[in-house]
Image 1: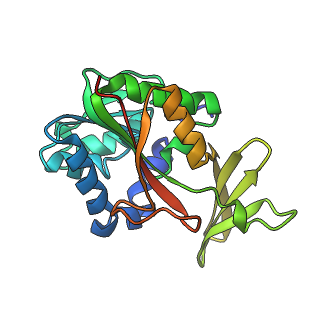
Image 2 (image 1 turned 180 degrees about the vertical axis):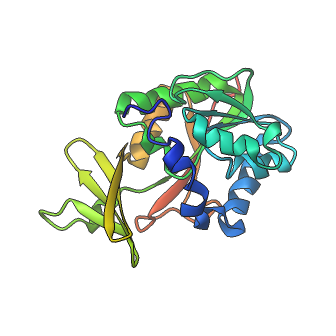
Length: 246
């Protein structure tokens, strides 16, 4: 990784909104914004990995002051260029350790972004960073998938998640290290192009322990933003940890 923007440089930023179009629909965005606005109350919100503003912009549109931390100047340039982008403050840096000015009622991290931190230490640092930004009684919210290891038969390391006429996408897993990578193969003009992004998958119970290390406690966990029950069949979760009020 040589790009100062990490794995989300100009080539990714230029097509990010289009390639993730399903995540920009009202059905995907509105429930998340509803919950975050309630948790923020009259306070400020901090987004780790703010990207192009999929959640930050509509949340700011609800009257919640929003600040974001992101390593990618290319991604945040798209945010700033959108209507309302000038209302969202941005600090460039690694959200595991970078400090933003002020304190916040809610910090949040969505769409599997915790997995972009590829070591357990970095993920723990992220929880500590969130707790350090929160006001007493504030909440840290994470949306992330449950590792898909149940889909791996013995001897297999890959799970496809996107198949189209000219595009294929699949994840590969190393169950010994919790390392995974998302791979994208695109055929253009008869030529195949391959790109991949490394991640570290993490279990719900492991996240709870990280929160405890950072001085927070689990308040709620649901399958999705609308409060669906989290069960052993759930493929993702939205979890809320609270910083003690005293």
